[in-house]
Length: 110
Image (tube, rainbow, N blue to C red; front, side, top):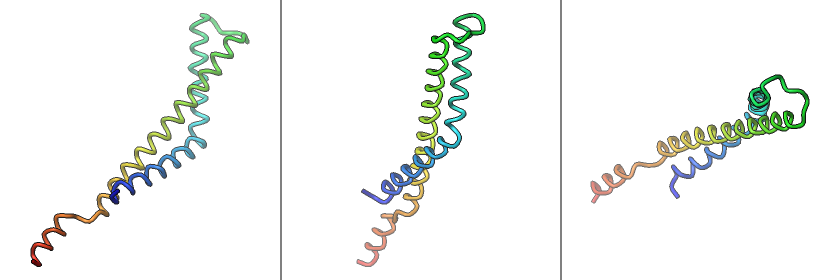
């Protein structure tokens, strides 16, 4: 495996770790907040009025909060992993020696 792919893989894993940490600090709260808001809107549209404390309304809100957290986590980890992989690929391409220069130098010495 060449330098470019190794560097890209390591940077992608580092980006995924950074995305996971940022998700824990930022995305967990906002994912549950946005998911809960969507759940309340779903409950209000299904029951056509402000829902009471029925079990069904609580289940809908809890499921939408869970879905919001999961989507937020996926977005953070995938986004930062992709950014890290792309940065690692570019850094690996810059660090990799050029084969044209090496071949041209060998043909001149012969």
